[in-house]
Image (cartoon, rainbow, N blue to C red; front, side):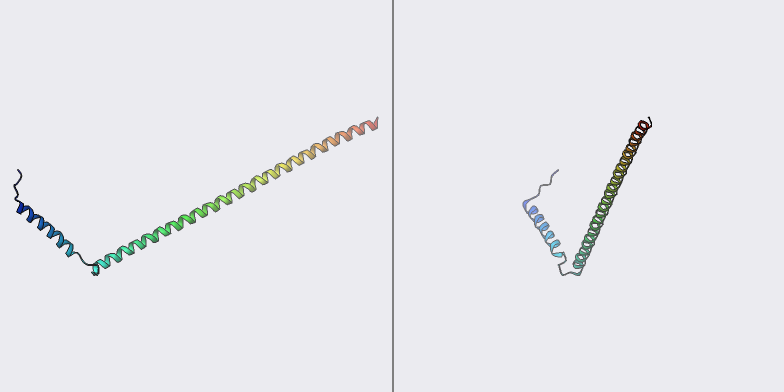
Length: 119
């Protein structure tokens, strides 16, 4: 069941609540208080340490990216060199095969000529 509060009771309760809030605000330590300054310095040190860790992570990430890029470039260079070497070997094989075919063709031609001379 609801209590029937009179206006004066409600008003005094309101004033008391406001007074309590004002007391809590006034009892807060000022900016010059050593505890407040110590907490502020501690928070600043934590923030500085956090920033240092963040900068270190970023530096490590950039180094890792640079290392990966260097590895990729080295791999691509090695792959290009391997392909060039394979192409060179293929061309050399084709030239040697062509020279062998020409030598065989020349030998057949010379044999035909020699056979005609013998007759």
